[in-house]
Image (cartoon, rainbow, N blue to C red; front, side):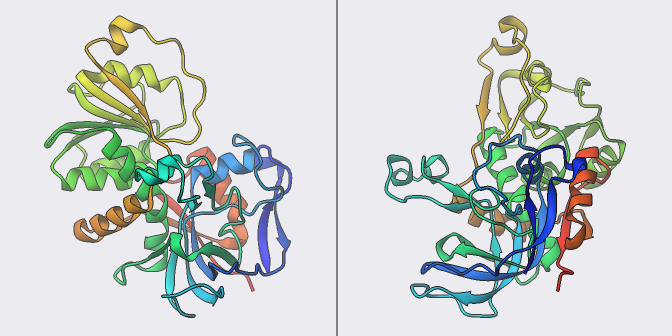
Length: 335
C-alpha cells in the first residue's frame, strides 16, 4: 500500500514527510484492519511531522481522524464485520488496569498509546485499530463531515467541559481552527455567548457566521469579561492575555498537546480572584461517544476543505500557514 511516513522530523516544508510503499498492516487479535476513505488533518499531525512531539515510532504514518470501512478482523474481535463503517481516533489503547483507568480517567493512563504517533495512522490506504477503541459513526454524516469530529470535535468537547462554563456563560476561544469551530457550535447550542479571538480574518468571519457574539484579533480584549476561555492556538504568549480577559473565578483550559513557552505570569493581574488554569490531556472513549451524540443532536458540522490523500504534505503546509478556516480532510485517492 502507499502511505505517508515521517522519515525526518522537521519543518514540513523540508520534505521529511514522504509518500512511500509500505506493507498492508496485519491486525492483531483484538484489532480491525480499516480501509481508509477519509482522514482529517489535525495540528497534532503537524507536531508529529515537525518533531515538536518526540519520536515514538520511527517513520510513523500520521493521521488520527480516520473514517473507513472494516477490511479484516482479528481472531478475537466480536461485533464488527467486513464492510462496517468506522471511525479511528487519537486514543488507541490503554492498559485498562491502572488507577487512572479504574477511576474513569483512561486519558491519563501512563501506558496509553496513540494513533499516528505510537502506531501508524490514517495518512495511508489502510490502518489498524483495536476494536474496543473504534467508534461507530452516525449514518447522517458522510465521510468528510465525520472525520474532523474524531479528534478536533472530541478534544474541543473535553476542553469545553474542562473550562467549566456556567449555563448561559461567556466563553472566549483563542484560535479558531478545526477544534474551536466545532466547540463553538456546541457552546452556542447550549446557550453560551461566544467571543472568538484569533489572528485570521477568514476565521473571524467564520466565527460570526456560526453565531459568535464577537470576533477580534487574538491579542484584543473581548467586549465583556469571560467566565471561561479555551486556548486552542499553541501559543504560550496568549496564556496571560486570556487570563486577563477572565472575570473573577474564571477558568482557562489549554487544549493543545503542544504549547510554546509561556511568559511570566503576574499574580495580581492574571491569577488573583481565584482564576484557574487547566490543561487538557487527550480524551476518554466516553468523551467521544458523548460528543458524537451531541454533534448529531445539535447538527454540529465542520467547515471542511478537502485535499487528495496524495497531497497530505500540502495540506499540512497550508495548516501551518493558516491558509484555510475550519478543518482540512484528506480523501483517499491512492491506488
